Length: 129
Image 1 (spheres, rainbow, N blue to C red):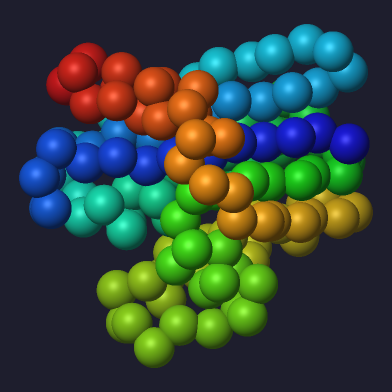
Image 2 (cartoon, one colour; image 1 turned 120 degrees about the vertical axis):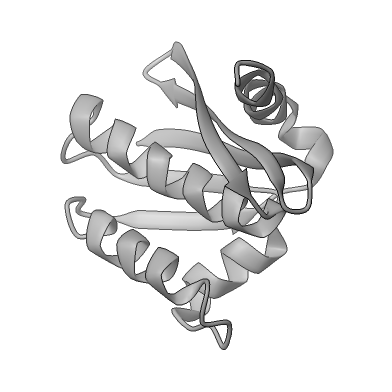
């Protein structure tokens, strides 16, 4: 099983945004930062999950994925597979599509203090722009 920590951040809301991904796999650790351009903070959180799924598809195919995010909105939306917000619907649909490539996909909410590495990587992505 792969543990994936995701975080999205934006400098302003909306503002310059970034995604941070921290992955634990078989005792190894992987870090990724992705500049995202101008997004809201919530959109950046969704894109962090999408980017992490793309990374996992490339480097960890067919693995069981256990995602963690400090965004209740993102976790609740994915767990319930529903959003009323029309701007989040295409992001949820993309996540649905990406998760089909894996035998199992889980996501759970964690407090910010347990997600510091992904947060640091998301902020690094902001500063790269």
